[in-house]
Image (cartoon, rainbow, N blue to C red; front, side, top):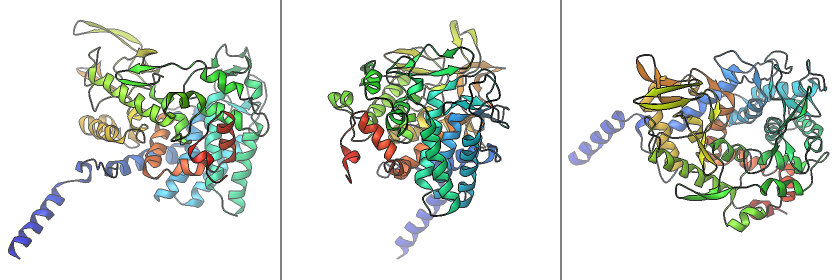
Length: 460
């Protein structure tokens, strides 16, 4: 009995001396208590920084900014997660969602250079936080509209109750999707253009080759009103780049957001289009390979950036310290501000800037390397990097800042915050994926793209 009492006392001492943040990563559950805290803090960005009168989410905070329509799509997706986690009530989420969708439905759609929010069912990349009108001379964005619509469709799946508010959510979401004229954006058919300016017309670029725009093509193929033909997907895949990078063979795209965004809503596990079927790998496993290869690149650290290693890695589109060239320890270093950083066989764009979202939004693909990285970044850099709404957008340990080396961003970015909340939830319980599997438009789009197998063939 005395021996058992000593063991019990020792166990209590150990429990009290170990904070939740010090708990080791649980390989069996794939979970760590820090993820609960990170998800809630990051969720608060959307709930507290969004304009409650129109649902517009700021592109960044605390720097005063315009709204990003892609960030709005992420916001529409994180509100139900907030309900499920107990951060807000279902009524609160429904009210915010309805406000957002109603605003976009009634916002002016014209081809005028000013005073409009969108045209042909699309919306401008950035809009004024208060009025919702086009910001400056930004483009009408096809991919950002797709990300907004994906969030709207998720809302329509979650808010399924027979109440006036939730019925309106479903109606507005469906109407917004049906209004988008996907065919109009095929300026060079069958590909879909990146965007359009009222002053000069379509941009001279189209989406061809693997990137974040899978969700754009799937929505365009699934449309009940203005759908594109399946040859659009054939054109999309015809420019894929396959190869080995740092020991992992996969479909390459440098910035990790390209391996994440479409996966926020679509569970690609076990479903294959013709291209990936021939490779014997699905898009989910492909993203896993991309994450591992980028981590191996950081471990190798061929350019000798400060702090890179097995738990400090992650290249994607994010803020950077400055547009400048500085000689550091005899080495000429080029730095940039906002830039789509990445590493793949298609090229390396790296100035020593790490974005925590690159790792965090990869958590379903490789939790065993993502979670230790997140904990290391938080513990090593403290409140220089991790504050009120979770991880600040980016940091660069190489860049000289005052008397010390190391630049830390002062802003959060909505398009980098959203994937963190969503992918933690998908890793936790497949929440977003499970609901979107029920959406008939997503199913139709995938099938018209040639996907088959797995959950696509269930319940038919």
